[in-house]
Image (spheres, protein in one colour):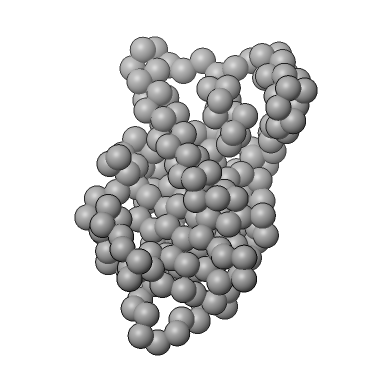
Length: 214
Ligand SMILES: [Zn+2]
């Protein structure tokens, strides 16, 4: 779907026994075979002979540690969402009802050097508040209870990024008003039992404060 180029991106899931299975480093994601999967302990240790896990395994392990409900993590560089991340713009306006209900706001984590522990630290202000985060000048990470759910969230992030980009060419996006949001929240909670999260803005402020300190 054009969400990665070359061997970029990585995917993992957590088995019921707590072992995390991830894509091997340096493999093209369209041609992943069983032999390209590596089993990693929650501590990050890998049995020898399996090959090298994804270079972003530290970010995946961090999400699993912080979120016991999460069983799959997807990291990619989809074009439009990555353009927003490169322009250092969050997608945190309440714009599309389906995205508000399924993900909430999509915050922008502070810049972190890829493949280093900085990436996990940059997610810390948001990891409990959302399931989709833009990585500054890098890409997107999404998570879910299943691989499918995590991937659907990646698709939605890219969709809202494309829509926002196009809306800006048409004079600018018009986010839902407070009362429209209130009605959406009432309908979602009543009809689908979905609680809409509104507190991502708090994480955004925390991240800005944290990045000013460093
Ligand atoms: Zn990446």
